[in-house]
Image (tube, rainbow, N blue to C red):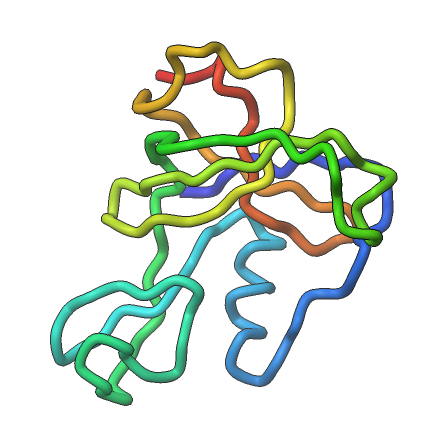
Length: 144
């Protein structure tokens, strides 16, 4: 499934760490697809993607596309931000449990999150500041 991409109109505070291995992840994300690695030995997903399985230490990993839908587990508002993000404060961060069983951290954008939104299903689109995308929440108000 292709996730929507939201342009934020400002440069990224720091560039993504693109290596020969992670290039496929960043290219997929820029195309609106959230991918990670899946171990052929034990069948477990890993995020962020890794060239080996941290569960069974197998090097037999393949790329797998994630649906991009999950439940908001927790959220917080950052008021005292690190220097690179100070101009963006206050901003919201969330922890999301994806349908596939992974838990990821996301930058939340959009309006205020309703207090009862934790635990509801939502789509997690990609946001791109400078042509590279990151998983972020569109708005918990859009929760399904």
